[in-house]
Image 1: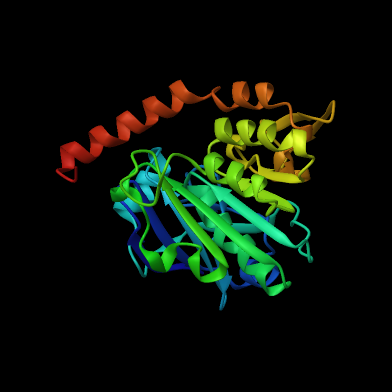
Image 2: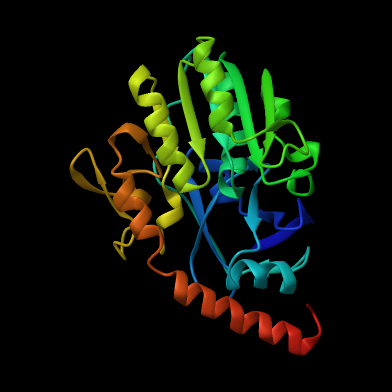
Length: 281
């Protein structure tokens, strides 16, 4: 039922995968996420959505942990995933804001960048995309960038090998100085999102950011993704995954994001050792 219909590299570290899931694609709205499971004994993986069209869900995935590596190495076009659940979470409010910016610097945010601005452009907004990458090698093919749905599109790289040298924060500062930001959405690295919140706070610019990165099961059952939001406990999976960045306790979020690093590292190393024994890597 959840057949893989497309799969290709975006960069040495990220890849694109498209899965048939008509019931999910029909109901999905920008801002929401999905959860996939590769096999009967696999873990639940909350994932941002790049596209939900023609009964298919498109996702950008980083080869980061055991499951993302397993999906990359062991599943091909025509194979089926065990499960695809969604859409989950609350959609963002799509309306006419004026100048809408989406900034991203990691795989989940790059997917959301396209999906959000597509909807915002259709709502009559002036759309501005800022996509940050480590270097030229990791920049996605143009087909998978947010350029087609952006009235203005900026690429930044840490080393300046493509586009502007630096991070999306540098471009946001310039846009603010030019009075070209009415609302900003963002996704990607939590540390950068916390800095973005501090950058836009003095200007009172509405800033909506993703906190999906700290989820585990994605349904609220585990309680792992609870955050302090405006002084109250909220759950990223049920109340988000996108929140007003000025109300998020980012210090708490960053601490929670690091809880399972050791276990994740161990699982990844064990799986890579299995692949080495098979001569795959």
